[in-house]
Amino acid sequence: MNISMSMSNAGMTYLAYVTILTALMWVPYVLDRMMVWGLTDTVGYPADPKPQSPWAERLKKAHANAIENLVVFAVLVFCAHGMGITGDLIGTAAMIYFWSRLVHAISYTMAMPWVRTLGFTGGFVAQMMVAYAIVAS
Image (cartoon, rainbow, N blue to C red; front, side, top):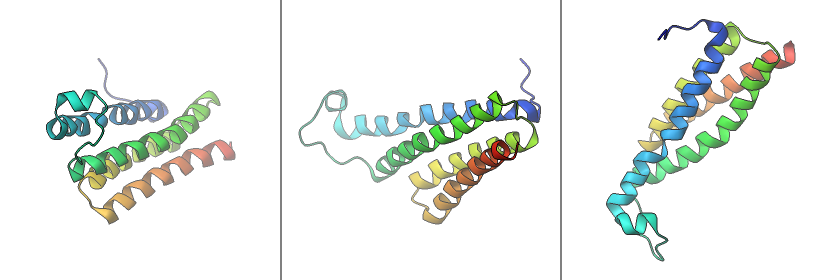
């Protein structure tokens, strides 16, 4: 397996990485739910569930935010790819997006507001980098 990548395919590679990250984000907060609620209530519909751990509540919100922003980023990357726009700008934007979203998820979960905001902003800047490449082409 060749794990090295050129910048021309980095956009799609990092899009896959951030999608995998987003797909896995529910696991820790559902495990917390099982610990706090028990298995029966976790798989059921408890009338009056106990509050989850604060970190798990924050991770759940970070996950929802990740999904909302992944839609925008993925569409932009797919548009660029479909238009044949690849290369350093797209690859760099995708790498920034992945690391920014990872920072956002961790800092949101750990209640680090300024770091969380920087992570979110980095992801937005990456989205706009891809949008610029599309509009400028």
